[in-house]
Image (cartoon, rainbow, N blue to C red; front, side, top):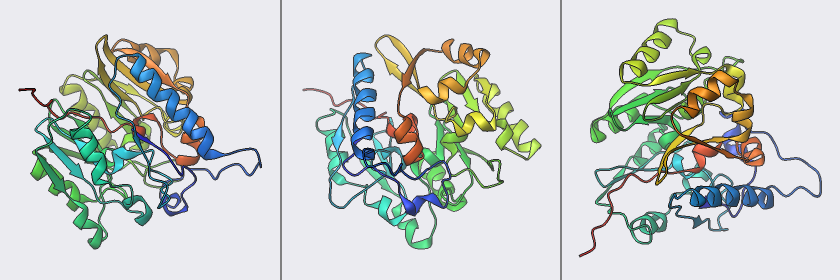
Length: 302
């Protein structure tokens, strides 16, 4: 998790992310201060539940309003790989920092054996924004991806080839018929469950094929509405803890769910609620976006 130094509304990403809203104009409202409090609350709760949280401080210069969402520029894999991703907004590319990889391998105690760099695609105007663009079923090696200005078909193919993932691609749209900017607000995949906004996938054949694939791989599907998607009900992540699986979801998202949907999630782990309304409203991302989960192998101690 990257503790922000300059959190705020990012005009460079707003064109493709209508989930963002401009900050309140009140003189007493400080987005950075409020976001820090929300961030610290999430990190503390995860640690209280037995999750190792590597908190890396953002650097104040240059200003990086979206640094709180590190999952868009890096992912970590159980073969010892880190993947660096091409990002649409130039000011988001500043978030990629070598010292963060060093912190994961050093203070985190993980073994990082190779770095796969896809960022050369930025020069071609082709983007793939990490586990925002990719929803990974790491058990079955399936990458789900909703095509959008931030999720390019060619880069998807390169990722799939290098990392040996099967691709399941589709298109998802909001109520204004705009492509949904990231796959991870449309859907989430846990070990034995999946949350998905079927309503956003207008092509009935693709929608059915997607649900069939998830169910064939052993996932109980929780179908959410377009309204619930806007409340980040699809931006869910499952984490492993000493006490069993944790399902982390924002308080806003949980409030939007009805009882049968809640019970379906509760059947697969302990639900942890993250109160992050300012991060969601101004940043346009939710709790899953705040977590770059580490699947690297542990370093052995000789």
